[in-house]
Length: 142
Length: 311
Image (cartoon, helix red, strand yellow):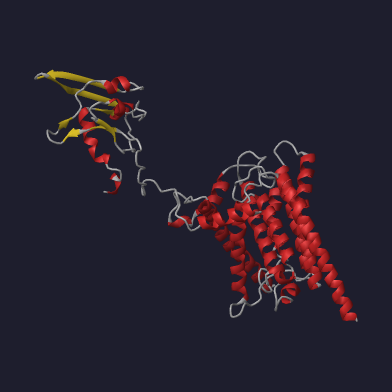
């Protein structure tokens, strides 16, 4: 009996609470902190070049085999030549972020990635660098 | 004749408007209780939802039986004896309450017929079991109505309402009101308005798909709820009596929607009562003893009062 009365007051209180659901294209919710979105390559702000040196640790750590890295030897040092990421395969597990010793890769907050063509989900190095704007959590407010 | 037609038009208009508002409110309140928004995709706050919902049922092709026609027509016939407000009933009789209850029980039996009927067979044993279960839920309600009849010494709705000009019957019969309210709550749970409990009997669970029969079932569900709320209002809450400066018609509307919202909230609160056995347990272990005690107390007071007047 007490439970019924308690349920009744909970129901009554819910009438005046804000609904949890949103009308998606018109309204959007702030993504939770720490949620995993599309991976992105970080930039070194002094040189404005990618931090990644193409060591390939992320490629080895990736369980879906969706990362392809190629590096080149230039002026006595290795640098990243090509970084391919197939988002169609990526499961956003975050192993690549953990495996990276240089902290060159991180997961952004971008979650809207629907495309008409599967080819558009194959990201190149430049595409991954451009994801910097999605590193901020409430990106959609702008 | 003209007055009669006018009354019929008024009754149909009032029922139609209330049907729209109540189906809108029902969906809105149920969704808000679950912290949903409801009516996604409908513009202007979902005002067109009841129309589009009924059109959805009409658009589907489904063969319907004679019982579907009866459960569509009978709720309207029911309103010929139940006055919505003062003088808004077609048949003025001294035994209006009795006729209304008989019609209501017949309507419920037709509902069970409509559910039990399938395209290929008609399961008699199942049907009888359902009728017995459902009528057993009516017993406490009938006992509490009997107490009211003894209290007011009449079966006429007008007399019952007029006798409450000073104090409402809820003051004399608080236990009876509680029993009556819980009883109609259980019956509304059987009607499955919120489409939450598919196991219960009065919904078209046996039928494949939805169609015009589902529309008829929902229509009769809403009108049964109107009837039960109006009965509560007339028997316990003063009917169309004036409340200080507020006129009777407005009071009827206010009480109607207040009881409706309360019923919906309580119906969701008892959502854990999820089988017929639990309903019957509640009925036999709580409601029936309470209603019998209430009836006995009323009868004793009635006899004592008469003895006092004789002395």
